[in-house]
Image (cartoon, rainbow, N blue to C red; front, top):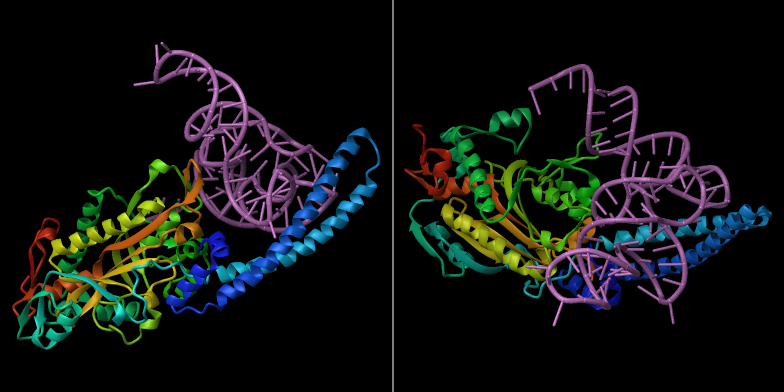
Amino acid sequence: MIDVKLLREKPEIFYDSCKKRFFDTSVLDRFFTLDEAWREKLREINDLKHEKNSLTEVIARNVKSGSDVEKEKGMVKALNDRIGSLEEAQKKISDERDGTLRLIPNLLHDDVPVCRGDENNQLVRYTGHARVFRDDRDTFLRDSGNSGDYELLDERPVSHVDMIKDLDLVDLDRAGKISGARFFFIKNRLFKIEQALINYATDFLAERGFTVIEPPLMINYESMAGATDIETFKDSLYKIEGEDLYLISTSEHAIAAMLKDETLEEGELPERVAGASQCFRREAGAHGKDTKGIFRVHQFNKVEQFIFCKPEDSWDYFAEIVANSEKIYQSLGIPYRIVNVCSGELGYLAEKKYDMEAWFPSQGKFREIVSISNDTDYQARSLGIKYRTKDGNRYVHTLNGTAIATKRILVAIMENFQYDGGRSFKVPDVLVPYTGFDTVSREE
RNA sequence: GCGGGGAUGGCCCAGCGGUACGGCGGCAGCCUGCUAAGCUGUUUCUCUAUGAGAGCGAGGGUUCGAAUCCCUCUCCCCGCGCCA
């Protein structure tokens, strides 16, 4: 949620940010109308309550001295009736006002490119050594900013869709039978590699000051609503029937909500948390996209970086999270680019977001594997997470970013490190201590 | 699932129909020739704010007045049962 006080004091900066995000600013107009009406009611109610409190004090005194209080009792009853109906009216107004408030997105960082469409995201940098099929060369050069290190291939690398079948690493058909599309059984060495990725990423983050946790995989509506903009997000979540519980779509939401309604000591910040969990997504709006293989599935493992910090430090930690993710992909040897996500594609919560996109040689494209956001105080305000300073309590800033989302990285590994015409692939060196093997082949 | 006990300000804890006690910690100041001790004030949220209102797990009810009594719910602790 945005800062209501700031909205009242400086409405123009919110009008400006909404326009840049291509949001309808009428929600702001509506807010101000309702807020004024609410304030008027509040003043009225406050005065009546003051009157009532004075009267009950008189009653208390008179009861002790034994004098008659029937007249005063009647007056308080009459006041209660008026207060009751005013409060009802006020609640209606404030509910509606708060509804508009939740529709207002975070402010925008100056760096964010103002435009719509993922194709207009701004390239920050490309790193790595990509294997590029000659027909994809132009796409690769354009999307990597013409500066990319790469080698040209005469044949298109084999898709992971075929490799998982040939190498007996995933059973999609039987998963389809028992659960439906976008479910899978992960098998054999691919299972080991997935576990290795999780262990590698959590070890990596633990060494850098992160507390590693496995969160609850289901959280209630209130926590979900605090951690996300739930109205636009609802359709991508699984709901547990008959319970006030949703399956998490990322551990970010559980970690953010973990400190809900808490006030921390200044010395407890920054709090770095690495969450490792299964993530569940309905992918409701994705019919027809990535229907084969395990690129886009209903459940995957993810290791997430999350930081609660003081407002003045949050851009430093944004850089830290970006650097962590980059080091992980560099060490795995996966070529990637970073883009600065443009204003029209940013979520409500983020003031700025970097996406990392890995190069997928068989698709001939960069595809999203990591998303890193600074939500500033937006998420913390919705969740009531503060810290104590000598000048009073302030909201913390929250940041989140992917370390590893396993299914997509498995695809990236298969497609980037295949050899022998896709009948084998190499396991990244940094994972070998965790897997105990360094290649996967059909013969295995 | 059954029975019992709980939830009070950042933390601990008292109050059990008359408007939240005390301690700890934090902050500010005073005192003091020691990195000690002591003293005073302060500590949440909201409102066009030298004032007022709200707040005792959540929501409802009774009452002139509810932390306190009644109802519903949530979570925690202790037993019993069931269980990977």
